[in-house]
Amino acid sequence: KVVWWLALVLTVVGAVNWGLVGFFQFDLVQYVLGAYPLAATIVYDVVGVAGLVLLLALLQNANAAAEEIAIANKSCFKP
Image (cartoon, rainbow, N blue to C red; front, side, top):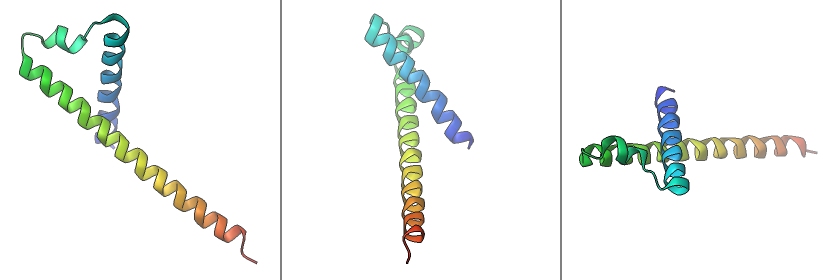
């Protein structure tokens, strides 16, 4: 659960940064860590991994929900 929350926070931070880049051409990560390019790269990588963690969690939840719906449909339509 801690990993999920950490992934969520990092993904939101990444989304806000991309919003700043898109709307204002301002990269907050580069602004804060510009003097440390390796640190900026690590931040980008960690945010990317966090996004993948959330994507996998979303897909797992979608599969579980689809299975529950299939089970419910089978029990509802039994003669």
